[in-house]
Length: 228
Image: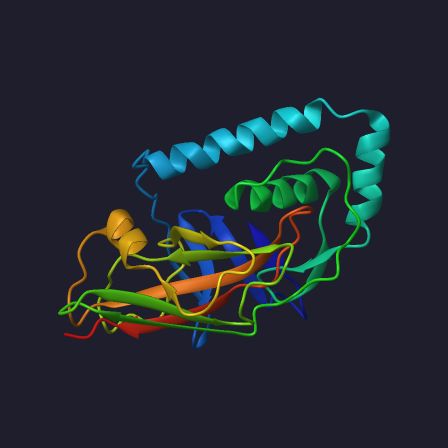
């Protein structure tokens, strides 16, 4: 559980005593804790296998390599659930970068990389249709910059009234360097989630991953209602 202290407590995340602290459009909330169903899908098993392999790689590093990762971690910040800038541990940074590399089918790294000059995804949108089936993702910059892959994730179809999703995202596709916008993702979406249904909503996120180092831009999200 994470708690942010102010004069008393100003915000919180996580679970305690059967309750979960979170936040919605209107501010901090508390709800009854729900234990998620472990469906043991192929995707989940692949992620767990990847994390296990990366942890084993970490245990095999030399002290000098771990020291280099610790030094790099001091130069890297991320934004936590409260919007505050925090430092990662050396192990967490090692895991994060290698997970990004694995997601775009790159070669995992053991040596701490130099921080690259990053390209950021500046725009993303998605359209989908059920009548003449189509899923098209438009993104910028286009084409995907040299040295980067565009990692796309998507959700299954949800009710048109839903405006927030989090755990539903699954990896949809990797658009390689020089790949141009718009990107036809119909086949990938059908293979992942099945047939499109008019009136339902889907979400897509995208981020650029630097293939050699694993550093990535922030996710941009887009959504649409499937047209007839």
